[in-house]
Length: 601
Image (tube, rainbow, N blue to C red; front, side, top):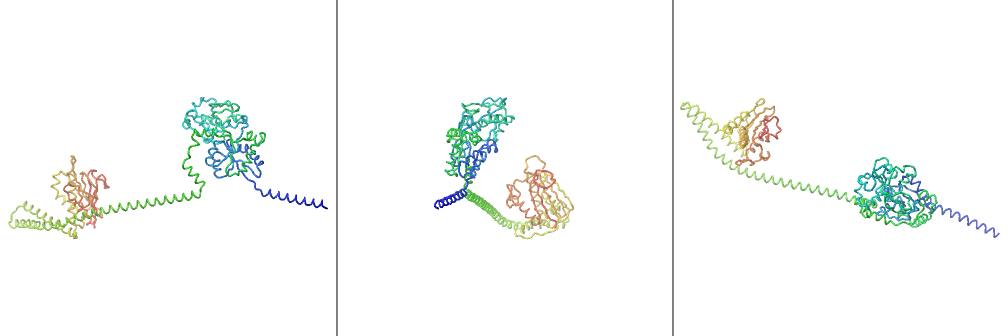
């Protein structure tokens, strides 16, 4: 009975233990690890080469599964940044680049399956066609070459180090360098097809392509070749440490220790070692040669550009980066708004200052006008009596001639002209007094053509003395307008007198001409006073202002009075140089044209 009890107890304990182990196995999670490897011969080849190694690690590291991820240089960097990779298998040059920004640690260095298991198998081979005239490094100056990537240690960087040691400036040595990326075979094909002069390929690339039957050995040559003892391939540069296995800081030390032990224990005849083309792994090899190369090329010590530093910081600190970016945008908008308000205030102050200056000038003109008004009123009052006396004496003389019956037509005609001019002078004086007192001038039907001809008659002697040829042209059907005869006559006299002064100021021997065109249109009369004198010396708006004159003895009232007369007749006046005038068919391009428009009503 005791034996049966013991047997039953043991079976129960074993059953419970099995259940416990089963549940324990189910509760332990499987760690997924991704290993980035440089796909220097393409993605498919990289998976075929390295996946057996990942399967081997999955067997040796409990509760872990490893997956190979073929990448290029930039892809390895970006996936490390996004924490998509936990391990990398790459050359030491790429490791040094990445270690500046990512916390990485070497676990093991790969031993080459060739070259007697050497750990120094990374270098560059410069390849040309067999029939190429290029025989030395010197012959490569200014030539076009291709390489895989500027970050490839076993390629472009090793070749740059060789040129630097030979005393050349690497950046200025080649004519053109194109980077084709991975896979590496197109580098050799570019040389074969004659598209480039040379190719910078990783160590043993040429021999591997010859061995697989992709190319013929007789078609190519190696520039600056060396064949180190114990090595199977020709190389142009010195050799650097082989690829290594590195871990990111996100992997626990326990896992890294297990992986390192598994790599060291890998047998040379294991399928993972054979497909990976390695005899196994050893302790990390010193990177001193690579560091010295980078120092020579100033690759390691050169600080990255500012924009790259900012971009990296923004990637790692997206929240704070967004806040700073928002602050920058708001600050910029606020600065632009302040600048806009400042400019607006500045423009307002400048405009206000300009208005104050205009007001001060207007005040000065008003004071001058007030003084002139007082003087004009006194002169009008004093001149009215002698003009009235001249009118009475001339009329009395004419009556006396008629009463005595003396027949002297010439004397009578002279007395009549004296009487007419005295009456006109009296009308001018009365108009000046009315103007000063702001009285409304009397409107009457007028013949504009007749008023213009009377103004010319008054200045006929001065025009003849100056040798001015006067032409009057009338177009359209004449009609009368309501207006102030004295004001219009005074305006025409002023305009003709200005043209006469401009013509007399001409020092050349041009024919002095004055042309007056009177155009009767359905709703208005347009009168053009055109001369071929010197033209305007100042802006028309300045000359229209009171007390503005270009004449030494002028008061600056002529055009101001003309403008006042035209405005009282609800018309317009415009003065401009002939060459700038919009009037069509002017007789000449010299001189000045004054356009007066009077409405019909």
